[in-house]
Length: 91
Image (cartoon, rainbow, N blue to C red; front, top):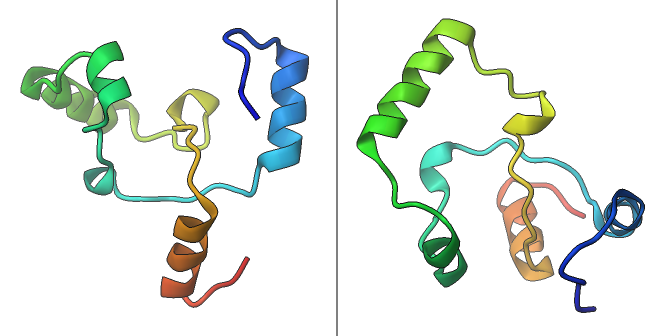
């Protein structure tokens, strides 16, 4: 299903309800930002920005349950199944 360029909150809620499987806690170091879309749409990684973020986390703490600290992503079903199997879990 192709997503429209702009979706309103109700459409987003329907998509999430249909497709959402849960959340996962992962180490930031395993994230790979080397995708063409990321390179086109986002800035390069900056050691200065990373240092600044580390200082914020030291001062304020990591509020991982706050919505703005979540990274929404889509993964294919095979990756999900293999990841769960690696952890001894199933879908």
